[in-house]
Image 1: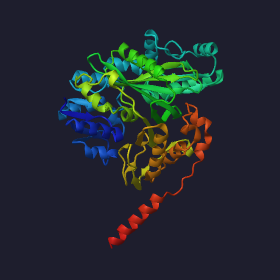
Image 2: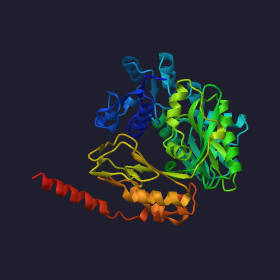
Image 3: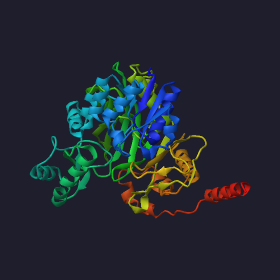
Image 4: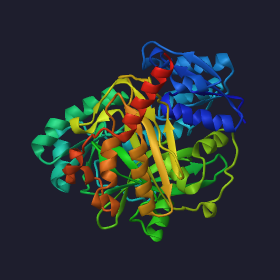
Length: 472
């Protein structure tokens, strides 16, 4: 096993990796920018090193990170998600420098990092794909011809990256021509690759993804699925496991398809194979994410399998210690992303200082976060502050547990998604399991939530007053 792992990330995912390493008795080294100098993960790591310049560039400087790992004696690097986690050149640099990259091979990242290449591979091995263009599209006439053949709506998609960037849904020739260049520029700004392709847009599907674990000895298993249909601008907000609509037969079929994709690229480590499931129960492969996902926690809650711990063991060359037959899905789990955003204002990111913080607890409640009272939320990074994940025996119990946990959650000083999530947890269609990717668009009343002053605010104010009085 490794002696020291450099965690090439920040925030809650850095904390998640540090915790797994501590359980495995592996030393950790964190990297941080000046803006993150007071981060919890910086204090919890065994060592911490500032990288620069600026708050972002240091996290993207492959050579600086690998050189640091060599200098401090780290024998492996865990990239988390985002930043360099899907960067082929970074994985290759780690490999040639003798530092283990905790993730798939550069070859697999290259194949799966391009949605166009991934689609071609899926088609070749017989996994259904959404009708789309053959390769990248640069010519307007080619795009118009595809739209005429398949019919609108059509989706413009970036070949690289994810998170909804470089993605546009268009419903006319004029919209198609107008948005091709826009999507390409956005993709280039986000991923350094402006190539785009077109797909037929599937109306009101479910977004279903399967968690994969694969070792270097030819063993590949899936840990069931997650339903990530509740999204805004194609970015996930709420994830659940397992899906409420998959039959055991369809789960087995889609799971086999996911494993087929992984085998086709000789995949190892953790990954996620994503599908769209249409209203008639037909599924289509859309992409594979060759990394750890934000929403991995819901899978861990219903399987009791530590995905990060397995990532580390696989990278160290160990075989999987669990078979497909041993994977059982128990109960239900929901994850809510607690973002520093204002849902009423088009989810505008909100920076500032957290003036009060009290996280929920109790049976079946898990918090993955790295924030605290007086923490300064910087404007430079993704708006994710924490992930609240709950588990219950039944769907009804799980929803009520999430509702109660959100009511307990106190996070003041910046606008967050907490009150919006509370509104969803008591909405009739969500409670009944009636939702797909159109859920937020078809339920505009969710945005009319009230931000009442909660009882905890009064408790915190009284506590502060008492402390101040006793200090006199």
